[in-house]
Amino acid sequence: MKTLSQTPRIRQTPFSERVEEAGVKAYTVYNHMLLPTVFRTPHEDYKHLKSAVQVWDVSVERQVELVGPDAARLIQMTTPRDLSRMQNDQCYYIPNVNQFGGIMNDPVAIRLDDDRYWVSLADSDMLFYYMGLAAGFSLDVEVFEPDVHPLAVQGPLANQLIERVFGQDIVDTRFFRHKTIEFNGQKMIIARSGWSLQGGFEIYMEGWYNGIPLWDTLFEAGKDLDVYAGCPNGIERIEGGMLSYGSDMTMAHTPFDCGLGKFVHFEGAAECLGMEALADADQHAREICPIEIEGPPIGTPARPWRVIGENGTYAGRIASCAHSPDFQANVAIGMIEQDFISPDMNLTVFCEDETEGRACKIVEKFWLR
Ligand code: THG
Image (cartoon, rainbow, N blue to C red; front, top):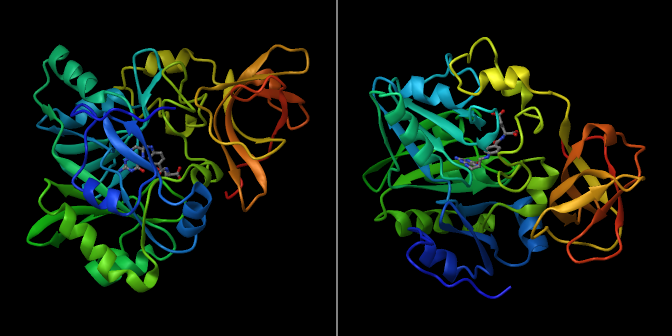
């Protein structure tokens, strides 16, 4: 592929200068913003993420802020997950669905106050949807994109780095809870979360002026921990079974298709606009499956790969794949039709421009769970 022409529409971030200096090798575009994908090589980045600590510019996790008396009602309209017991220091993974039960996004919701939330988006334009609902239902709520830029600290040594910079009380934050830190005179939300299985934190930095100081402080404090710039790693997140919206799942899929049925609460989340459709949906039509693909190492699909069964009929699609050094295999995430879900099934996948199909099989579970 040729390089992308940069324009103001593909937004830079408060950390972009340091990301470039760290030697970023490739970007993708996510929520109209640059997201690094490789620093050294995917394999080196992977090994390092699993052994040290990385700082990730995940400013692309754009927030939709909902504030006002109807904020709780609005957010519940978009998700089948029951939010009624969510505390003001909690984060929830909330699949967002439309009125047909199709997934529109799979954000992390952050409750900041009784009447104030951030919805930390995956890659789709949910700001407009939230604005549309607020207008259409005449809700008493403000909806906007705040100037917030998440910075993730991920890896086995993340606790040590965070302890040095923000103290033990922050390290004691439980999974998917948040606290407030003060950096350079500015208050910031920090949560124990992040798009890796290695564990760590996400700092929600508001504005631009503390971007470079925050980055530099983390790197200065983590020198002897081998802290390095990183990014969500394609290999690690497939091993961990973290789904990528727009790739592994799209609006054509329901939460049931995506293994997210546990977040569909027919009783507690009746206000969700997709609930009737989800009640009627076939809960076993297809499913996200961990898959191993035979043959030489192969990278991630540029477009979904077609999977067929023994008789040549459509069996599903694979939209994420990577070669895992630790498992010595091509690990992939597939959306597989029910009739083909069995470890004994002989499946064939057509990878990118390869004319010969490759054998692939559903494996029992994601490798690290
Ligand atoms: N952090 C924040 N915003 C985000 C992401 C993030 N927005 C985009 C993207 N990532 C959204 N998708 C996910 C997918 C999975 C998880 C978080 C965001 C995740 N899942 C855990 C798991 O699968 O083990 C826990 C889910 C739960 O039990 O609640 O962390 O990473 N700010």
